Image (cartoon, rainbow, N blue to C red; front, side, top):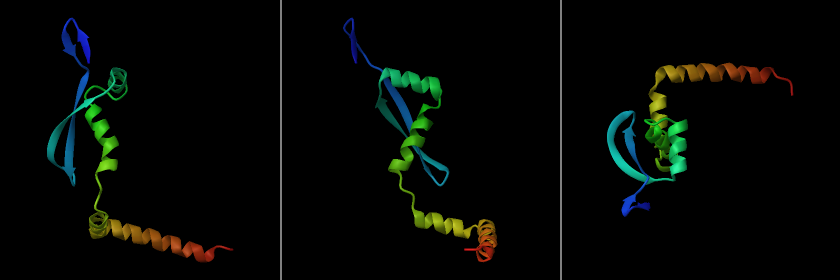
Length: 102
């Protein structure tokens, strides 16, 4: 914060964090983040003025949101087309191993 002529000013950036559940927007929470002015200017220049929230969310998400692996594997197994393609691919590679010389 700077004190200019008796007035307090600050460089505060407001970031909106979206919480999603399986691709469906559930809620948004506002988060106030204080960062150095040089960093903020760099974010605006490199990322873009209306894209900073998403950029920060994408960086932070893997560190704070744990995905339920059991549920994810169960959903993938229920996808018959994906499972069929995966089986076809694995069966195709198994035959190659027996033909190779050691």
